[in-house]
Image 1 (cartoon, rainbow, N blue to C red):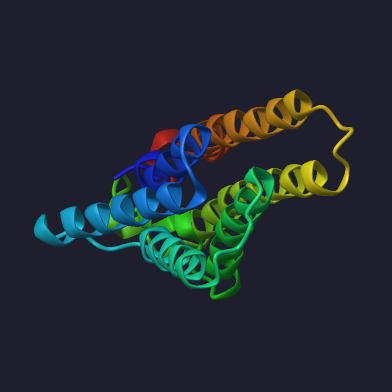
Image 2: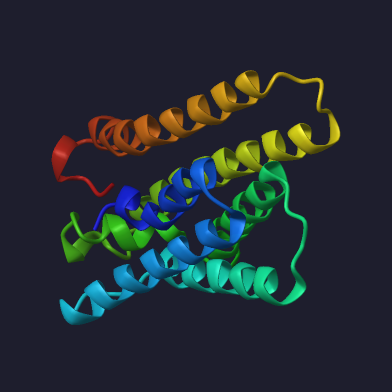
Length: 188
């Protein structure tokens, strides 16, 4: 499963936030997280840090919203979600299990899985995703605390960071392979 499929609950959340309430968006994202994990379990796949973290994040935020009835602003609930996503990714780095490693193993031969370069490549890609999610959370915070900043500029920055992370996730492993003797046979 690709990283983008793993991010589906967040995409569902952001789409539902445009046309519904925070509670409905959080509930939809929780449901999507559960569906992804169920799909993986039925197919005998490995449940990944991102899927587990997403389900926990959205379920906790949904329960908090149900119990506490916060007066979420769009930027406020987005900050909670983007901050939670950044935390999941940073946590994966802190425990030396970069979240991209689990996805990369699906397309790289097992003999490379413990290779230091393979792990280092995934550390770097995961760090880029962490920066992307921190940028997004930062934009949410700016929207809350500096309301005179145009929302369109914040959205453009968030989208640019996301597109850059997707591009880097494809480009960097190929770059690493090309830079080593043996080219495509090298880990990455």
